[in-house]
Length: 114
Length: 114
Picture 1 (cartoon, rainbow over the protein chains, first blue to last red):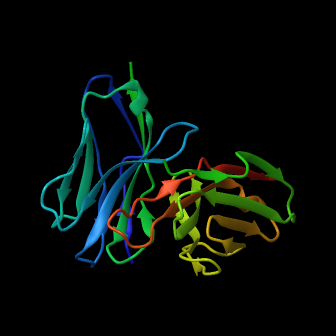
Picture 2: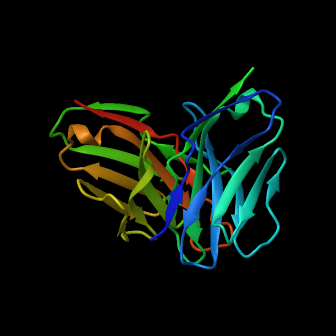
């Protein structure tokens, strides 16, 4: 079974600062995908960034980047130059490469303070 | 853009009622999913379907059933609603086993059972 752990239920960051959200996972699989999803207040969940486990290079999408440590089974999300619109619940998710089911963490509620 | 819609944003039902939650996607996705989202528990998979008339149990199927008569529509049924089914319900869809693997989410239905 796959498990995903987000140990920070709530975090806050000053506008324009950088924040890192933690995620660890447990799996015996060698090929898989990892995702960060964002759920703004009262709005739809959207994909922020994804990482393929066989790729060494960390994924980057504009102000969002990940630190993927496969041996440590760690997948943290770094948000640079935080903006008020980044205030949201963030979920880390895992999926086996040959599967269709996602496994989600419990989420981190991020508040960006003006 | 992929669009996943859910029939209601808010729903209030009485204990013992039969409840139908409807989800429709417009991108010809094979996979469709139903999750419930509770504070501190993250997203938990109730059921998913990878084809018309096909369904698989997720992690918490008890008290729920599903129906997929058409590819674009996936219904979640609470046969006899109970107060512990008060929750946010999220529908999602994705393509079947492609490199993309992203799940697209609907806006959610907040169900209250009184």
